[in-house]
Image 1: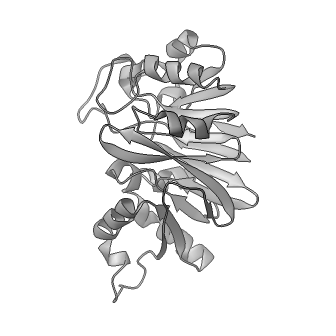
Image 2 (image 1 turned 45 degrees about the vertical axis):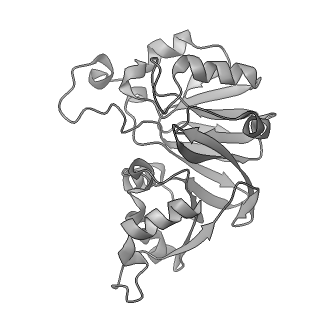
Length: 253
């Protein structure tokens, strides 16, 4: 299994005007982050989790040639807004793109991209197949996934486990029952917004506490805002088994 981090950043804390903080002025490519997404290549299948506003740029940068499915964690725009650009894969592959998510997520997508689901679709619009998933194991194009329900303040979000890889973004609480699904993962990717406590995201201390509790072999932190600090400096503060993820990072499991 090959994992490529397409984006490790967040809309949370992104300045809408020029920012003079150290991270925004950094010339280190590790500090240049697109919105959070990951590309999984496993058993000949190509699956992306989330299609945020940077989706097109991420597909081009990673040279994604085939797309078998998109899985959604939740319905916030920084995880769905780039879906229209999946139309390129419709044209290339001559088939609909399967989308997997909670009913609420797929409902929101049908509202935001109503033209793609109209009975009278304009030529060239993207085409999708919708697959509703519940909080139980499922297969996406023949690949087994285990959803992990986490809380993003009061919004339920799905993380996903595939094999020994677990991916959780946009969370600040994981119940004991859901934590059991993570146990034994070789790699855990976990939401870590900043050092200060936050209403709906894990802080650095909270993420490290959960990683330690679950006895994770190797963990990567994602959904990083510029408030967390410079990549090079934060890396020096982390335990040996924990690292900051960065755009373009590739893992082989």
